[in-house]
Image 1 (tube, helix red, strand yellow):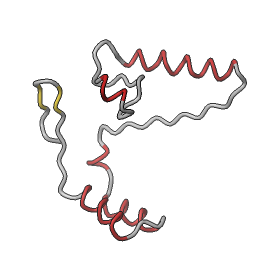
Image 2: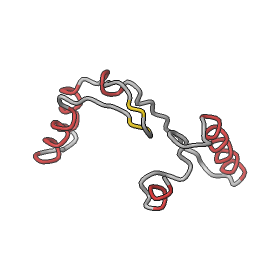
Image 3: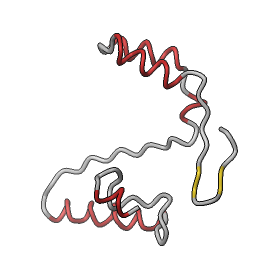
Image 4: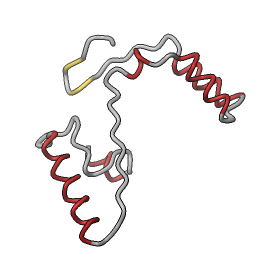
Length: 101
């Protein structure tokens, strides 16, 4: 995990799948950032995304059409098409493997 943080693969304040981190860690971090921004008179923009059911709730053809409409073509569009088609997911953490989803 340290290597992933050092190589900017994940951010240092990521809490998911890390020992001694929890959702409370995230709340404290966000609250601290918000309070610091307010104190400094800065603007704050936050985006929260829950990908829990992302692959089963997105209509792939609609997504691909929207990507094409914003200008994705050829290799980039084909990469997304390949990535999103016939895909299953599993989570591997230490010696535990999740069911396919």
